Image (cartoon, rainbow, N blue to C red):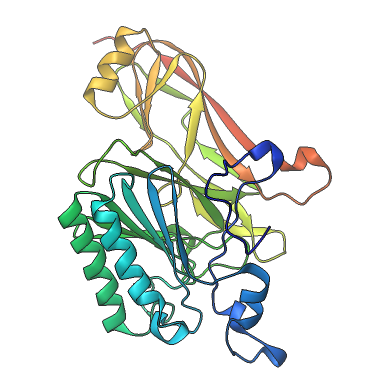
Length: 330
């Protein structure tokens, strides 16, 4: 049930619907009658303690409450809880890394800086705690926030600080710098330490339609720059927000069996050995033509089309076919 901790010996069972769901309260969860900001009494009654920790498959999750824009002012007791949770995780062999979540990020990527933790000494305290934890333990640490509604990540002393995009509300910022709606699918590799790629974020943007720009043909041995964009709804209206198919969105490229997808010279050499017609670098969106033939390039995004039936929930896919022609003689 919501608001209750699962039994210590219980095993989450997706088929039985028993996966625990934890909520991190934001500023709206503290609003009361007539939209006046109060405290988290109503939230606590419905969802349980607004700050807590739990361990899952080697990751220690530390959930914080920043509803009034400050951890200290929202609930002072969570600061020593955070400190103790990190201290215990350093020596606990069952903990491989830690992930800290709060509604307000330590830093707002927008120039206004209006959606970050208001107490900058408090923000510095969190940064120091996470840096020290990483340095002393060699274990990974990450902090995830929202509120600023601009998909963004920055690293400080090896610790990534991620700002999540808006899920439905009109985002802040411009679409080309993370101002889009979507969600993030996290992957954790418990076998890797803080100096390795232990954490990956798949930033999935919603789309009503996808435009993919490619040349009709490319000569073997030449390259071509691919481009494109998705269209998202503006609020609840029809699509009007145009988001380029590039970072910080994670673009899901695929294609025909004779198309390779990879980065670097080794990937190109491997594609050539396997007889591929072309290879697409997903980081730069550059297509390298290897030999004569025809390849199909595909982009897929999660759907935010108006609901008519279950088919409208299916991912949106756009494909283009590119002819690779023999290199000109001489």
